[in-house]
Image (cartoon, rainbow, N blue to C red):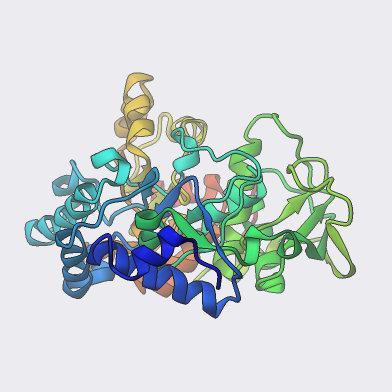
Length: 416
Ligand code: F3S
């Protein structure tokens, strides 16, 4: 692999041990994936932030790197933590766990992440970190990578935890995979004839196509969606997140909507075709048998203000029996307070949670055995990461579950 003089010096340790370690990771990954050279990245997004997931060993690894002088070289943002960094007590977190989680974020802050004041979120693009079309970035959160590649037209592979930190410290990543034109062609054509009425319907569609696509880039035709219409970004956010979770899809194209869909020959001539005429399997596969619902979780990926407004409308005049947690980035939480949406949610018994992802929280330890969500990705990870039972349904079904504490069948309703 070709390295510049500067990169060679970093790898030799001339700029200290922190950057040498980072260069070793970037170069090793580049060699594994056949990169001919490194390329500069405009921004980085780091995952592996939950103390529940990284534990004492992960925190120690980060601490040592920071003590060696690790400092980010490009604008870098942070994925969600396990808890609301301010309101964790009200969520029921143990102070000992909270102290460790706070330390993880503090170490990233010392490295310069978020300019020293990180805002943990999986939707950095909703709070101003919006890469330009064609820009090379190194993001780690799979749903954010999908959104950046597909909706924004930026270029990122799905970075792992240490790989993303290494990219942040060097400002480099290997020129391979989705940074190159060849990997951006679609090899699966998804012809959608099923009616789609809501954001969760797009999530259910993503669950079906993600499973079939695996790592391939799908090209969607027939989606009832126009760029700029109400909730178009939220629908694509849900679609991409579900495909990233149920498959390993990091890029998709939507005819007439996403920026690269009109690129000549973007659909490979030898593509396969998948016809989706029914969303039922997308919902049904992510529903467990448990009848009781202990928690309803909205905001996977982190909710936009518009999504929270939909939830506020849905809970109006209702009294919730099961807790309702809506996760979002802190600036979005602040906006919900300013606009009175937080008060409407709280009046029904719900709560807006900043900074956190419930799938990477110690859900069982918090006393929840079954969680309902209108997100296929959320249900997938609740089962596979948090190890609890899950229900995936429409917003209407999820709010009904919060009111009664029960899941009412597997119907696919027509809510927003
Ligand atoms: Fe975000 Fe967690 Fe969902 S990181 S995409 S809220 S699983």
